[in-house]
Length: 219
Image (cartoon, rainbow, N blue to C red; front, side):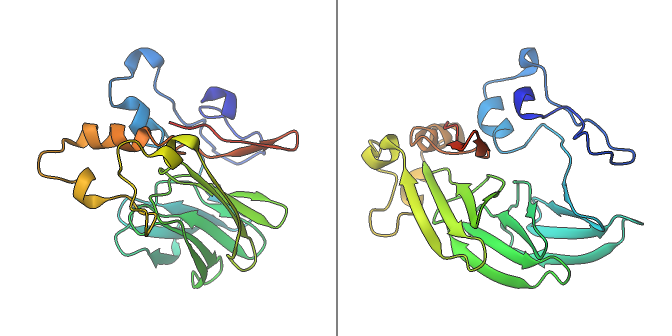
């Protein structure tokens, strides 16, 4: 995590910027791997441009705050779906993924109005990676998507071998979504359900681009 910059300042000269925090490895518990992978237990610098800060939250809203005074500029309602990933920003839009509603959202960064939405089918906890004219995201079902940054149209798709095999039969073959009847069955404990999803080789950590290669780490 520290190799990816967590726990350090960005180095771009932000006033009063804090370095964030990463729990010591000695302090991790049995639930740390799945929870830290989606941002719980850590703090980091939110997405920002010259005038605003953009923050997704577990209350199902994306907030745009003015840097000058911290006042709310707008907020976007994601229908109670957690926004645990960081946002990404270009000259026009802010991009963020959602959990329960399984979406990549592009919002006008001045008004907060939706520009487009792209279906990811499964919970997405990764910060959108902008590369060329593409937005790249990963899902917890072991899938990577490349979407056109301007339109949201799917450009390419990758699925891990573990997800293709789906040995626990938790993916609905018709819809590509996770099967609620298996993951949330009355006799299914929460951690056991998490382990079934992790077995798909899910992408909880955000992908990066290094030396003309896409690098993505699975669960």
